Length: 146
Image (cartoon, rainbow, N blue to C red; front, side, top):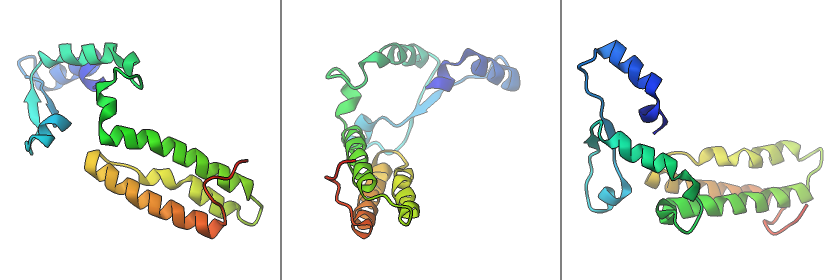
């Protein structure tokens, strides 16, 4: 969204491809994916108005009015924050010089959680399995406090 709203980026595209070139935004909204659409849709220059509106409403993120926050992937992302904090507290409670490398490896695990929608959710499952295994090896339980 940032690039689509960046006027200097749009100007550089016009310079590179000519003033007659047409710019479109390609999206694959989750709503359309649920309805079975497998292709991205192209939205013309008129869609910049919608993007500006979404940008202006970003203060709604994380509130009850955040309609995008109800998606499974967004709920999972919020849950992951609490899980990660609990895991780090458990590690912190048992941290020594000898297990520092293992603690760092646990702290780096969230880098596994990448991708969009289903890819991200699959990576979350892998992350949780790995985290639980590493916490068990570390001798920590997620309920411990620093």
